[in-house]
Amino acid sequence: MAVGILGLFAVARIIVPAAKGYGSHQSLGLPPCTSVALLGMRCPTCGMSTAWANFVRGRWAMAVRANVTGLALAIGAVPVGIWLMLAAVEGRWRWVHPSPTLGLIVSLGFVAAALIEWLIRLGLGT
Image (tube, rainbow, N blue to C red; front, side):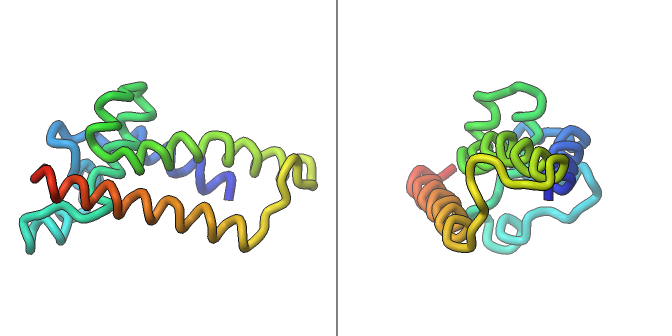
């Protein structure tokens, strides 16, 4: 899992951040966001790859404008990645033992944050 997080940061470094705040994944040859293409509106995850691409470049304000939840995920991935790497190297868990309940709570928190941000964006028309 630590290698997977490191891989996400490596891909974020390869991605070219889109000026409009979303669609950066297209620099990898991926298609445009289906929600934007079909409905003309951003989905709850639109801008997350752009947020990560800006995060790894130290462009905090641009990452916030792209997707606050995406930036929060990137920031959270740093200590989690270090924690997982330490566990892999040392062969034991430090500080916190992983549990399905904790994982579920954190996951639901990020889903709720993404949905709230999306509803705010819909209300603002951005």
